[in-house]
Each structure stands twice: as C-alpha cells, then as structure tokens.
Length: 145
Image 1 (cartoon, rainbow, N blue to C red):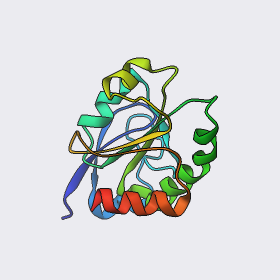
Image 2 (image 1 turned 120 degrees about the horizontal axis):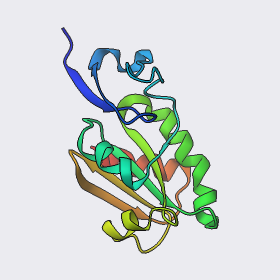
Image 3 (image 1 turned 180 degrees about the vertical axis):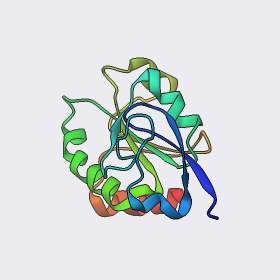
Image 4 (image 1 turned 30 degrees about the vertical axis):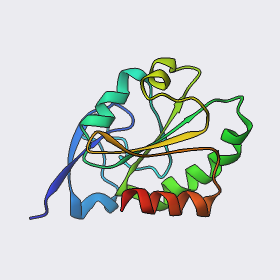
C-alpha cells in the first residue's frame, strides 16, 4: 500500500490524506468534492494561511503580489504556468499584499513580487523581483532540491 500524505484543499481548507501513488490521478476533497490540484495557484488569506503552511506535507510556494504592481502582473502568467507544470509536487499560492498586510508584515515582505518557498512549515528560500518562466523553474528546482 502506498504511503499517504496530507494535502490541504484549496477550496474549503480541509486536510485530506491522499496516497502518494494517486496524487496525479486528480484526487478530490471528500468534504467539498473539489479537485485538489487544478493546475493553478490558489488565493490565500490570513485565515487560511497557517493551515496550508503547517498541515500539508507538500512544499508551499507563495507569491506575494499586488494588483497595481507591473512586475507582479508581468510574472503572473509564468507563475501560473509553473504551477501547472509542477502539478501535485507542490502547492502554489498567491497572497495579495494589499489585502493581507498582516501576512506581508509577518514575513518581512518589503518589495513585490516576492516568492517564498516553505517546506515542513519553514521558509527554505526567498526571491524578490519578477522572473521569467525559465528563471522561475530553475530557481524552484534548486530551492526544492
């Protein structure tokens, strides 16, 4: 039998156990029935951030951004495509730093876009500034080992 991992649903924030061997088979949340991995980043708010940070066994990649930020808008399609390519290997999320100022302050976000990579609930990498698709994927490959 395959080892199970915990994944937090991007829709209802429930913690779901999924056999690792079935992660790429489109698992659904048993509570809200949403697909757990839709191939795009989820929006995180202060109320749900801690659940995704500490209860999931997957790495969490967070883009701190703002709607008025030109470089953020320029990088958004690359972040979206990277989320699609990584599939179920990591959870990709976006935090609107204007709406979630407490989260931005908690992590010392001083410029946007800023990407943070968390593994096991701990920050393991940080990068400020927009990146194209190739640079973003190379950076994440090195950050995630």
